[in-house]
Amino acid sequence: MTVENTGALTGVRVFLSREDDSPMARALEAAGAQVAASPLCLYTPRAHDDLAASIERLERGEYSWLCLSSPRTLAMISEAGFNVPAVLSAAVEAGTRIAVVGPATAVSVFDVGQRAHLTAGDPPSSAALVESFSRFVVTDDKPILIPCASIAKKTLPEGLSALGWQVEVLHVYDTDAASELPEVMSAAFDEAQSPDDELSDIFLVTSGSVARAASALLEARGLERPPAVALGEPSASMLRQLDWDTYGICPSAQMPDIIDTLAKAGEQIKAAAR
Image (spheres, rainbow, N blue to C red):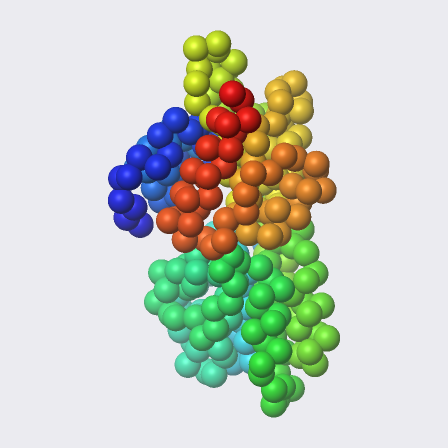
């Protein structure tokens, strides 16, 4: 991921629930932001017989579509001990098509040697993928497989079922909040309390689970939540539920749009502080 160093985020401190060397963190730093990045959610693959059985069926082409709503899903299947490139190669060769929510998930498919047959939503949302499927006619009785997190919303399976598709949901991994606020974020919040600190603080919320985890961890530390920017409507929806002040919703998951939304939010925050 390459982003031109425009300095658009100079004077902005971004809190991000990603690894500090992640492509998103690096891109934000390249745009001039100070980034406090560390994962706030822990992801654990599930080991169960249903997963092995579904993988075998997938390889035999017994599903019409494989629907992926997060780039993390394939990583979790891999961590559970399966050869994901080989599985997808066999599935596609046997006639299964791959549908994904958003470009990031499409990249995760490309990284294991395949191309998504259908990419919907930018910003990504399960509702957008359901809308894309509304243009298809159900022509066979093969089900759709949806591997996902155990906390995943039912928007995708319920939407596809309403369109007449048979759907099988497979919970591949569990999501839990970190036990405490990571040190890198704690240090950044301490810096923000300094009277000499002039940075505009923004929490870039990349998912509903991140919003919940961040809100709980900050409350446990007695820290005030900084203004938020949401990556997509699902994140924005959770922020509204948490009554978290939100200064923008990124119109897509592309870094230029994310940076532009953060920059505009930073300007609003500075104006409000004057």
